[in-house]
Image (tube, rainbow, N blue to C red; front, side):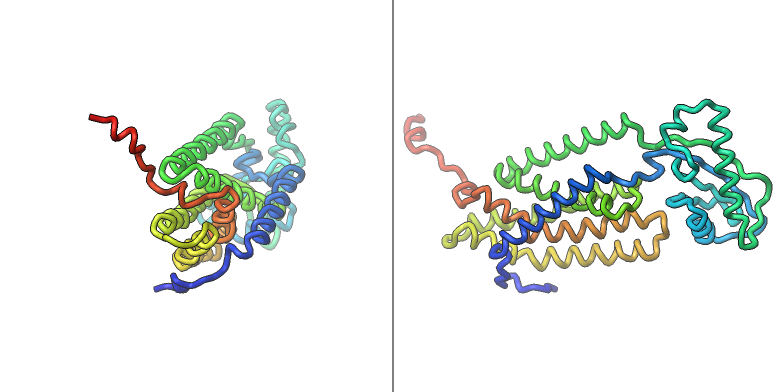
Length: 327
């Protein structure tokens, strides 16, 4: 089954100046937003106060989340232990204390601040007829992602990018490696820019989704590049621009079908997976859209800009003079 005829002639390379310009504008906007606004880091990065509450009667988790949002505790993480027992993690700013102040406070000051947060939470949850059993227990919890882990993660991502470039340069050609790296950066920067501009919570699940987007982007791009290499070697006629356009058209059906099939699953996850998976699935939705766009309108134009040609991909012939000297 194919949505597009592999022999179709959609002139995607004909509008390359506009698509590349649009991608560059979006990347610059994302970088500016990341530099000025930053990301709205979730509790996995900032730490906060954990409050454990017990209700006299079963309560829906969504009702607790709604009550906390109404009371001003935005972005609180609610975890269900049973029908009546819940754990709630509150960001530092929601309790009136910054993470830096909490980290430098004495134990007695920290306990007092956590108790005050717990009391505010209890007051918010006791409304609308909800009855709490006993006083809520509260304690400070540190961030799951510390500075050392974050720096190690950045080093790991850089090492992976370098490894991918080396492999593609050896398997294809150095121009393909650079184009692939730029396409990856394009997709990741736009995804991060979306979260920076919208201010949606950025937690560990979103980070995992961004890394998945990176892998998705590489896979999609390599499929197109493999077709480019095949056409360069098999076609006797046609310049680089025509070959690149044919490669995009030949893989267009596969690219669209793969993206749609993945998108159906991710949208279902967003709609029915619950609040805890909203950030993860939303990052994947944005990443799939951006990754599909870059595979069609960004990757091959990068190859053309770098001057890829048929000679770059043909097997290297041995020097006849050198062969004649051999015994």
